[in-house]
Length: 364
Image 1 (tube, rainbow, N blue to C red):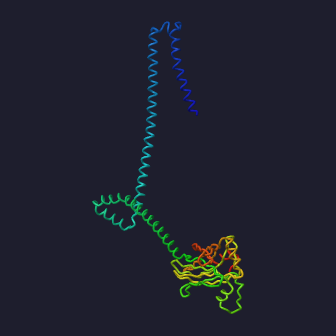
Image 2 (image 1 turned 180 degrees about the vertical axis):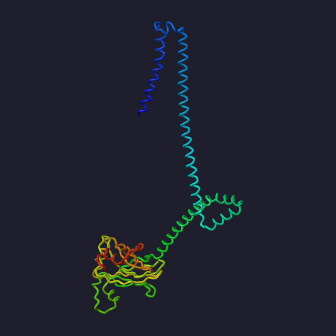
C-alpha cells in the first residue's frame, strides 16, 4: 500500500512539472525586465521557443525511452521468471514421466505371472543386443495384451453371470420337480346312502378320508370303521391324481372352511396316505347323517367351501394344498348331487405345527 502511494505521488509530480515548465519559460521569455533576457541573452523569443520545444521533445524522448527500457526490463524479468518456471515445470513433468515409466514397468512386472520369464528376458537382452528391439516390441504390445486380458475378464464375468442365470433356472426347475401337484379328474359326488366309490380300484388307488364331527361315531362297537361310516355318515367324495414328477407323502386332511371363514370341523379323524406318481387318491369327506342336510345347506348358502390338506415331497418339504368345492348341483340324468372341484398349486411352509397353530388355533 505504501509503494502504491509513493508511485502515485511521483507520477502526479512528474505530470505537474511537465505541464508547468512551458508556463515558467513563457514567463521568463516575456518578462523583459529580467536581467537574463534584457542584457545577457541575445536569442530571440522564437529561438528560445524552438530551443525549449526541442528540449522538451528530448525530455519526452528520454522519458519514453526510459519507460520503454523499464518495460523491456520488466518484460525480460517476467519472461525469465516464466522461462524458469517453465523449466521447473518441464523438470517436474520429466520426473512424473520417469515415475510413470517406473510405475508402468512395475505394472508390467505384475501383469507377467512368471518371474522366471523376466529373468530370461534380461539375460537374453544382456547377451544379445539384437534382441532388445524385439523385447521393446513385446513391451509395446503389453498394453494391448492387458486390454485384451481385461476384455477376456469382462467376457468371463458375463459368462459367469450367464451360468448363474442358467444355474438359477435349473434350480427353479429342480424345485418345480419336487412341488407336489394333485389335479381333480372327477367332480365331487354327494352320497347320502353311505356308498363308497363304485369305481375305486383298491389295488391301484389310494384311499384317504376325513371324519368331520367324528364324535357322532361310536368306537365301542368293535365294528370295522368302514361299516360304522356307511351306517352313520353321508359323504362328499372326489378323486385326485398325482400329476407331479415325484411321489407324495403324508397326504392328510387338515381343515374345511366356508367362504365366510367359519370351519364346520369339530372332532376330526383322518388318515395319512402316500400317493405315487400318476396314482389316483380317492378322498372321502364323512359327515354324520343327522347333520348332513344342515351341512349341505350351509355349503350352498356360502356358495362352496375350501378344503386344506398337508403333504410332503420326497426331500421332506411340507406343503399345504388348497382345494375349492362349489355349491351342489343335481345331475339331470342320474338325479344325484355333484359339485365342481378346483385345485391350486401347493404352497411350501416351514412347519406344519406352526401352520396349524396360526391357521387353526388348535393343533390337531
